[in-house]
Length: 199
Image (cartoon, rainbow, N blue to C red; front, side, top):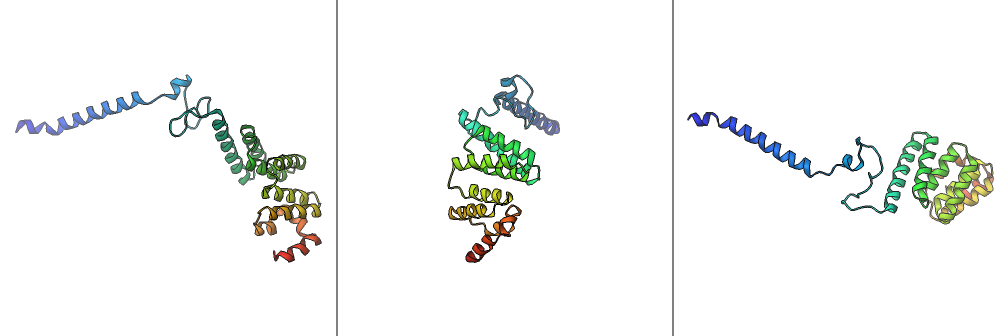
């Protein structure tokens, strides 16, 4: 009977011993990024070598690392854009394009951010680069329509809008509400054309 009296204490000691050995073996098997890079690593920090492995433990090619960084900066640019922080959006879209020069979506959004920031020369240059990347992209043609509308050239704006629709742009509500197309919508040419489409 006296032996049963100590049974709860012994089981508690056994549990503690088991947990300590289980945890220590796990810690010793875990690779340390801090040892690899010889410096403290903070959660969420970006440093050289932090993109060495993919999600399945395989080493990433330099091209894949660049693509991932491009996507990261593109997403950050989108967050900035939605918050109305156009300067920051421009910086992030440019970084995305630094990592991936053929990133069409970043090019399109960069042109939009330049227009929102009233940097029309940079917007035009960006649209020209976008046209070289993908001359049939409907969003590039749509942004050209916005650009020419903002520049007070409704005729050219309408031509680009027609091209955007020809290449697959189908967001007609956006055409009717986009403030960048306000000058175009006020033109006689647009009103006549819109009646034929029932916009």
